[in-house]
Length: 157
Image 1 (cartoon, helix red, strand yellow):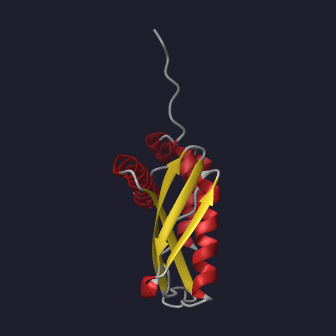
Image 2: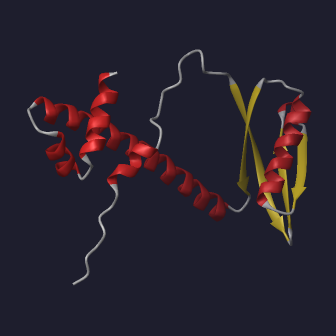
Image 3: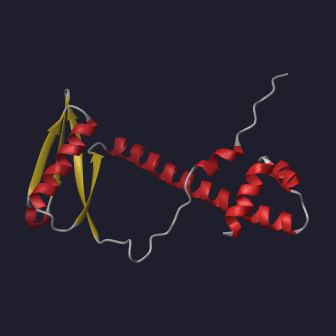
């Protein structure tokens, strides 16, 4: 019989909590979209800017072409608007959909991890308030009693 190693549930507490931005942290940003195509060993990216201006860049790797098109967009706009975002996507619709699915799955994972941290914090507070020991709470949630104590200290701050 194989014994499976249990998942380390403590690892999600090594990630920062999601903190909603305050009104002071929010800057108006404009996102520009570029399409990238691979031909041979080169990537080429094209983006349309306001006024019908087009910027085109090349690179030998995805990272190169993305960095190059971002720089060209930034240079063409001359700091207007103050904050820009650049989204580079493959021209191929199947590749674009595959990468979008990766981004969506990662976003879902981040939200799920935050939901788990929130649920653990709530359960730790509730169960200890009912008289459970930190060892029992930790055992029930497959966390160490030290982690439960840490969670309870953070909750009281």
